[in-house]
Length: 269
Image 1: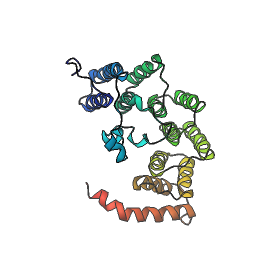
Image 2: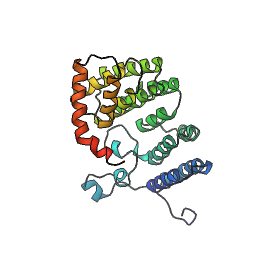
Image 3: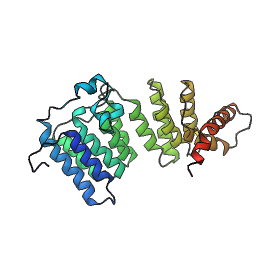
Image 4: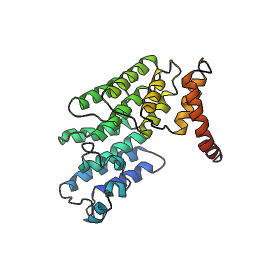
């Protein structure tokens, strides 16, 4: 299309990147095409004038939501996104899905070469894919030293720290949970469920899972059934007295959710 003289806007490039990401099997062409589309998109960014159409604005629907862009849930968050970087957002999200660290680094280098600052969504993707916890912590600290952090940034780092489930990693995750809580950030149902599910796999002292559960309970936030189930089974696997207040409360919540959702889930098998 571009060779025929047709200009593609950022959402067209985003669609092309997503199409190649979803194409199976994944090959070297997949990642090379993602980089190619990002490079091509830079040629049109300077002349692109599209913005949310009047009808979409009236309906309070952004173009990101309309085209199912990965940043759609963050688009109304002030200071979270640079909406001009849609192609980069989609490309880095694709890198995270493909677990292609090399491609991610190439795209981040493009941003650096062009003197474009990373927004919070880009930092989230980079942290989730960097692979080395020390590098992830450095990215997090560099980002939060110059701007206000977001709960999602904490969650991405904490969840990554808990992947290996070693005592050192779990302790690191706990430290950032405490910092997050001390700064007044709270977990909504989605973020809390993600963290609780990750923490519930811990075979150690279960401090992180208990702390996350207590954070949710303190604000009366409901976790998803899979997260509650994982937490409940983790508690039951430990030598906790049957009349312990925590296990009694979690058991009641689990049994209630199991009646509402457990049968529905099992019927899918």
